[in-house]
Image (cartoon, rainbow, N blue to C red; front, side):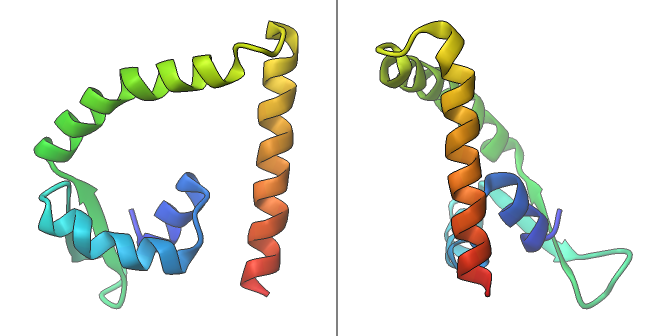
Amino acid sequence: MTQAALSVVTRMDRSTINEMVPRMIERNLISKSNSPDDKRAIHLSITSHGLQTLKGVLPATILSQEIILAPLPREYRRIFKHCLEMIIEANGAELSE
């Protein structure tokens, strides 16, 4: 995955991703290599340590989301998440302009 693709899937701006990638490499969470398709592009891959770390934090992340969303009736939670995504996308578009 390229840094641009990582930016899209995480919904984080490119400058944030650019700052985070070296720290994630240093912590052995991801590795980087030249893209086989485009020698100018950098390809990022999750390491086995990164995958293990991700699996370790997912339960706490899901629990945190459930606690935060608990005051909302179940039928509103999906709508609320969708609204947040719309806000993030709109602000991301403004930041990239």
